[in-house]
Structure formats: structure tokens, C-alpha cells
Picture (cartoon, helix red, strand yellow):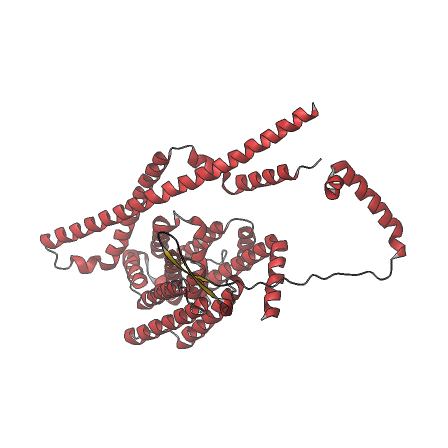
Length: 337
Length: 134
């Protein structure tokens, strides 16, 4: 355990030193994965689904705020839908607009959560989302999670029935519009997964915020199990075609992710928990104090046994230059103080 | 000579300007009540538009079934339900947006206050230095 904690400290130090590059790297990878998945699944417009376009969009979005990536993904989806059929693009645009009106106007900075939710569903690991959102966020994160699920199922439906949707002629635009809306909003599988995710997030969040030992572990395990039960039971009742391997695998992955998140963000030592009771004029206090676990990573110290005579002249010059600069900037005086 | 306190204050001010500066100054140019009520009205307009769109989409889905064998009484009932839902939505978002934007204004004002205090400290430090030099 202590080795892991030392590793965590080292990781933290590494992140502190190179956070700009690490964040930009993650943003680039996320963009690549997102635009790649969109183009791979619904690449109806050949020009927009090229590799150059995918990489170009990922690169551009790397240097801009996350909300731009969300907007770019939305536009890319709509462009592909438009290439397939106008009614589908219209209905999808309205659904995206509704998401913006009812939620993202207030918290545009949280829009990336929709991407995370949709990506998790796209990668067939849906139950990672309730655990991650429940542990790291608040119950309000249910809204972006639900938006992500709806976006994923919309894209998935178009992908599965692309041929039928494309073959509809111009006269059937109204019929196409109605049938697409009906099928997207009436998808039993989508509503079942929304229910599982919502219940999962609530369970994880409620258990995590209890003052019980190993709350994070219990929360991630219970959240994953609840999601699994809801999805499996719903699938049986509704006679859906959700893959059991996918839901069991993602629930297991959710538990693992919960453990990783706990290790990274909530390392405490429950064996040294102290229960204290005291009172003042107005209240009795029952306090539970759980100490944090922290290990300082050892620093490497290089000791020079032999002196490098070759660099002696350069070192002397460096020392003289540093001294004169320090004197000029007044750093020298401060150091001696 | 480098002044650490001055550098710290300048860094703090620069970070603030980069993160919130422009938006906060825009927010605090309004009184809290004005800012909250203006944005609540804007939200209500958006909500109305959203409700119409949502209604349109739902009508596309279930319109046929709803209008099948429709009587005047049934249409009036549907209209009343739609109106009631709209009112609930407007009240919910109206109260929520009012609180949200009031809190946003308060937070922005606090940040601006801190920023201005840092700036005035910096100014005092510069003046002191000038006096010392002269």
C-alpha cells in the first residue's frame, strides 16, 4: 500500500509540473476518440468522416475550451444526419437545442460530462458513468448523464437503421420525421438505461456521503450492483436485447474505477478513526474524524564524489554570472536575510 | 529589487483577469436585482421556446393517438394540461433562475471586491516606492 501511495505522490508531482501538457494531451485523445467514434459509426458525409477531418478537429479542439468540443461534436453529428436525411437532422437539432435550453445555458462548463456519458455508452461500458458521476459529482450530474444517454441512443438508432432512413423519398419526409421521433423517444432500451443510470448515480452519491467506514468502496459496489440489477431485470421484462456480457463487464469495470478514484481522491485510514463527543451551551456534538493517508515521495539526491575538472572554468563563469545577476536583481540580499 | 509581495499580488490579479475578469465586470455593471430579473426573463423566454419545441416533438410522436376520436371536451382538457405543465415549468425555472443569477451576482461581486482591493494595494506599494525613490 505504501508503495502505491508513493506512486500517487509521484504522480501528483508529475501532474503539478506538467499539468498543461497532460491536460492538453488528454483533451486531444478525448477529441480523437470522440470524433473518431462519430465518424466511424455515422460517417454518412464522406468529406467530414475523413481521417484528416477527425485529426484536424481533435487538434483544433485541444487548444480551445471543452465547450467548443461539445459544440463541434454536435455540429458533426448534425452534418452526418443531414447527409443522410433532412428530417433526422431537424429532429436531432431540436433535441440538442432542448438540452441546451433546459440545462446547459446554466452550466456550460459542465457540458463535457455529456461527452463522457455518450463516450462510455459508445465504448460499451455504460455503468462506469453512475460510479464516476456519483463519486465525483452531485445529484445534478444526472442531467448531463441523461443527455449523454439520449445522444448516444439517437446516434445508435440512426446507425442501425441508416438504410431504411435513407431510402425514404421526398414525399415521405413528414412520415420519416414522425417515425424517427417516435422510434428515438419510444426506445425502451434507452429509457431503461436512463433509469439504471439515474438510480445508480443517486445510490452511489447517497452512500458516498454517509459517515460510514469505506463509504466510497461500498458506494461504488452498491451502485454497480443496483445498475446491473435494474438493467438485467428491465431487459427481461421488456424483452430487450441488451448484452449481458456488456452490462456485467461494465459493472465490474465500474467497481474497479471506483477503487481507483478512491485511491486518487479519497485516501483515508479507517483503522485510525476517532469518535469524539463534546458539547457546548446549545448542542451535543458527535464527531467522527478519519485521518488522511499521506506519504511523502523520497527525493533523489545525487552526490558527486569526483569533481569534474573539465567543466571547472565554465562553472566558475556560471557562478560569477549568477552572483552578478543576483546582486543586480537584489535576490542575493534576500537570501542572506 | 524584486518585491515578492508585489509579484504575488500581480499574479493573483492576472489569474483573476484571465479566469473571470471580463464576465465579472459585465455582471457587476448591473444591480443584483436588475441582473437577476433580466436573466430570469431571458430564461423564461428560452423556456417558452423550449416548451413549444418539446410540445412539437411530443405531438409528432403521440399526436395521431391523441387526436383519434377527439371531442371538444378532450381537446379542452389537453389544452388545460399543457397550460398547467407550462405554468409549472415557468414557476420552477423562474424561481430557480432567480436564485441562480442572484448567487452568481453575489459571487462575482465578491471576486471583484477582492480584485479591486489587490489592485489598490498594488497602487499603494507603487506610490510608496516612488516616494522612496524621490
